Length: 157
Length: 303
Image 1 (tube, each protein chain N blue to C red):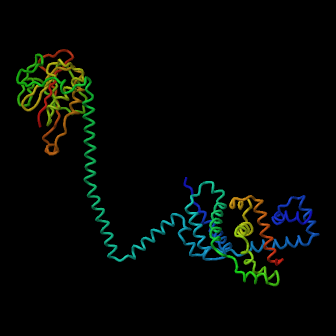
Image 2 (image 1 turned 90 degrees about the vertical axis):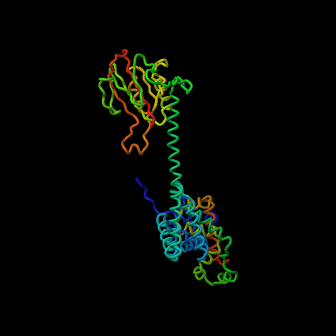
Image 3 (image 1 turned 135 degrees about the vertical axis):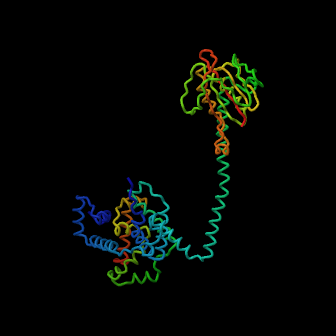
């Protein structure tokens, strides 16, 4: 009885991975390069049977490693003048319109966590295996990131 | 519940995973405490902003990238790409490469031919050697060349066959006068041995002495006594002759063994239809032979 070969992991998750790269790095060219390197790594790495269950967390683990390694070399932060300009916006509503700029102020790990949890709906257990952290650590990290964003946008501190 | 405790439960509040007993207290606090409720509201706005941010799909040119293809499509794409590149090469380069490839293949097959033939010949040689070794090893008493009975030079009457007279001339044995001469029989048929019979075997060989030694070994294996007159054979012009009495039961084995050792005829002679290397006949003997015994006459003639 022949086993039908389904799509490969990077075919299933290619859009998610690309969006994760772009949302975290905020640079299309860099995102494409990181995307290519992630796909090459996924292609080279042989998936064993256990990855049929935890395939998504394995894919995201590889993606996060590549993104974080590239982020170290990149400077995705706004310039000081831009940041001052952002902070000088009068109302929280106008600052909320530039939410992505404030989002880029977060640490890359925090950005990845928030994106995976809120945008892609991954459970904490899966994110914990991706980052190799406990769920409690992830929850407190998320709280810290939310408070930072809240402070920048609403409290303007 | 105070604000500090509310802060510790922020994550559960946002995810809706509060315990029932905590839920009531938290709701009560949030109704009363504006900063906490405001903070939670801001958190919810942030989370919804993240959740509703537009998703960026993989660009189309990346989707056609070979990394995103499965292996079968990838192979097909690569083959198509190679074919395209081949067609874009100038005709003289293509012709040169193709010609070189063909010449290389022809040279390879030419050089491989003799080697294959040599290998095949070595195989045959090995098989023949193994057969000879097996055959020579099977002599039960370890008969070596030195142990073989002496080959006598014979003429008329020198045979030690008891009471049997027969002339040996240029290679044709005389048959007993009015005896029945059986037609040469197909060696595949079963043979029945009667009393007072003469069995004649004619072998044509290019090395009668070598075959003679083998015949002596065959006869020794069949427990024919070394003292049997005629066991050593008689050398005569044109070949060697054995003329001896053997038990009737040994005839079929002797016939089988002689057939085995008879040489294959050279190709040219076989095609002409003029040469068989093994033949056998049966005659009735005029003279009575000892009970249980029959006479065999083996003639080894030189090809």
